[in-house]
Length: 407
Image (cartoon, rainbow, N blue to C red; front, side, top):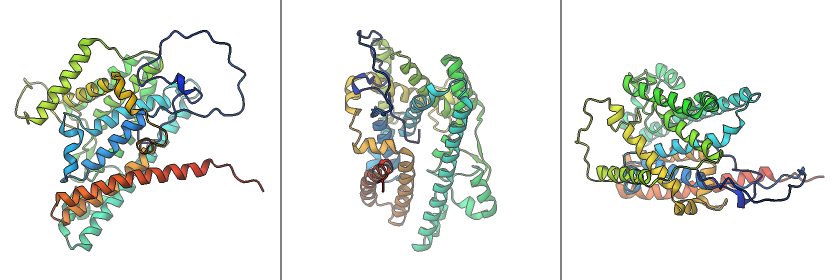
């Protein structure tokens, strides 16, 4: 989820924090009754593992959004069917369950829904602003470097050629620039989130079933928001990607009820085998192999827009293996002041910052003949700036917590 995730078990001491998707034993030792609650707030403890993984995804998204440089070959898209976008949406679903799942109670549902929809509006505004800045970056590059062909990049040309219609289309989410299509998808999913939470309260199986049906129908019949300016459709279809988001939501709610992920050897073996086959498929470019047998492309293809089953299963298998492996749980539990945790904690502003940097990087690569060395150096500097910006946001947030001086 592209926002700051609330702490886990805010009033619990560190010893009681549960591993990610791995609940502690149901049996608890006999202890004396706790003292009466105090008005003094208890320092919160934050499970940083989601922050860590979210930060890694943000950095990989930034790297992938500056194509044509060497670091691009090190991101997860080169080692399996899914990439950092799928991982980020899964983490977002987990975070949504953590942030809102237990609060969606009778008497509070309308207020919480309004809060969630306000977040959706924030994501919409962020999408519009980042799109305007992207347009300014490419237009400025075209003017400064005398390269009018920059306007033909990342789907800018239709808006420039039809300015009046283009402005209206962009505001109505009817036109998207390349690499500026994630926040709009998240905004739509947040509009759906109260309905997901309601179905989850009725029964997790109902939410998964309804979400799977929407995903399948969207994939088969190409139900997707339209980019009416260029007669195309959204690159990331929210009606397809909501299924992965819902799975993350259900998984977190299941964990918070004390239910652990199954660890049957057969399931672990199947997940590991699928991840291995996916790695080999991408490494050796077996894309020409046809195993569709007349089935819909959403079940047998590798399409990202409609989140084909091959991509969905890969991110779920990979996430499952990471969740049940103790070494990954230990490595991802970092200090609150660790740079990766700070990036993950401020995910929305860091994502916007990374998008702007990536657009600058694309213009730089374009006017330098797509020199991979220059692109790689830019990305390295950009990653360092991500850490610096997250540190600045943390420092800025700390200022607001300082008690005012009494005079």
